[in-house]
Length: 260
DNA sequence: ATGTCGCATTCCATGCGA
Image (cartoon, rainbow, N blue to C red; front, side, top):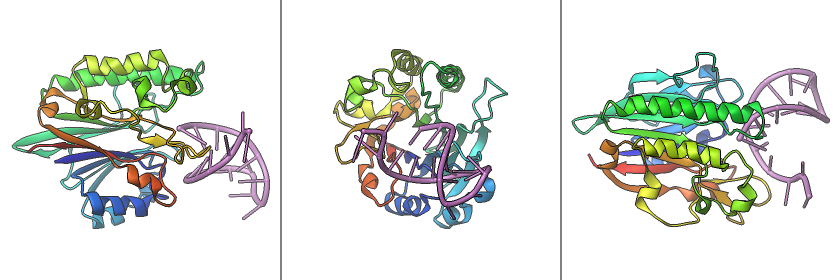
């Protein structure tokens, strides 16, 4: 069973890439972020024609998350608990069959938080607190769990091309990284780091300043696994080649394979 | 060199978010 996450930066602009990726990689579950669409403009029929069911939480213009799955999602949760006034579409969760049971999967689009010193960064930190709280609740279920998405967090200096460039950025501030470590400290395992110690592994390259050509990237798309999922972890993959496609997303897909 | 995208409106140019 393979579960993959991809920030597509507009589902409508990226539909052909998305269909191409589904056909070449055939993930069982694909979590999407930044679909930038609501239900009425989401290309549901094309995706269903490729053999995937669709659950989504959309929003006009910005944000928006979805989960595509070969098997229909059950027990779907739309939105991150903890703040009923939060209207940004950044969290979607559900379960799919896995072995003799299920795996619970979430598609996460964690706030960017820039510029620091503004309400945007306050919102990011508060959102991370809510994610920690909800993840604690999910851990009590003691089931395979994969929290996948664009975390907008560079976990360590080796996860970016030049740490000095990112020193005062919301993606890399000590306070941001500390909150990310809270997720790990409640017992979640970051899948890519569980399978490799390599540096220069990136999942995002800015459109600007020739970042892709210079391999000036950052690793901000992550899959966090509960112990029950980590026990089944076989491998991870960063689908870097998609960044070289014509008119690409600035993020590439990242996937895990679990046995069973 | 504050350099590129995608979206929406103020609508063929500009502001916002990333």
